[in-house]
Amino acid sequence: MQKIWLYGLHACKHALHNKERKPTKVLVTNATYESTKEWLIPLTANIPLSIASVQTINNILTNKTNNKNPNFSHQGIALLTTQIKMLDLNSYIYAIEKSNNEEILLCLDQIQDTTNLGSIFRTATAFNVNTILLPKKNSAPITPAVTKTACGALEKIKIIYVDNLSRSLENLKKIGFWIYGLDARAQESIKNYTNHHKKIVLIIGSEDKGIRPLVKRTCDHLLKIEINSTNIESLNASVATAIALHQIYQAP
Image 1 (cartoon, rainbow, N blue to C red):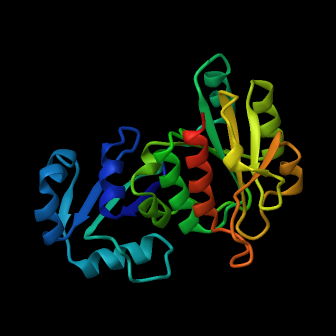
Image 2 (tube, one colour):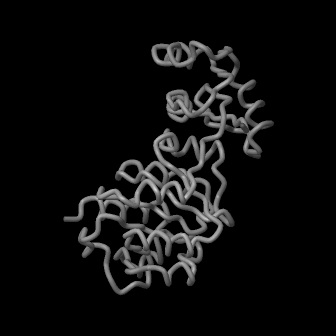
């Protein structure tokens, strides 16, 4: 299984807790080791751990993560471990089909900014989203930088990549999901959303183009976030996601 270098205190700590990952090496500065050893020692009992300088960790991350920015905010720790496992859509449908539980599935239609992606993962876990659906093409990759921004959320959420997003959404509708799309030009305000359906998909479009037309046609409802459009045209994708999920989360 492919290995990846992660960095950042929260990202590394949560990855070490994840039994599905197979960590093989930890690098930590002396200062970080002293401040984290209460949890770091138990989690790395069977993993090689080395004390390293800030520059050594910088050099390894620069060479191994394809990040062109040499100024990593790694907080004095780096972890070599396996990638997270992706979930298959058919397996998800099989698990959900006969469930009567409430389910919010977040769908990201070609989100390409890695900072937005990491922030969205973090926000999603705060509002009880267990699964995120993404198209394989034109989605930002889940890089170590995304993992750090997510602050451990990647270890708590299932990720599904699909070849055809529209067809996947139609398959979800067949098992009782209602599809809501966030669209700045929609007539219906998300503040009027009420929780009539136990299974919903919330679609967030790309930063520049929004939800693609073919994907938009799968929606049962299009919702907008009301803003002062004379001051600003639109919201950042991660901010819009947070507002929308908060509204859905607290809806009666």
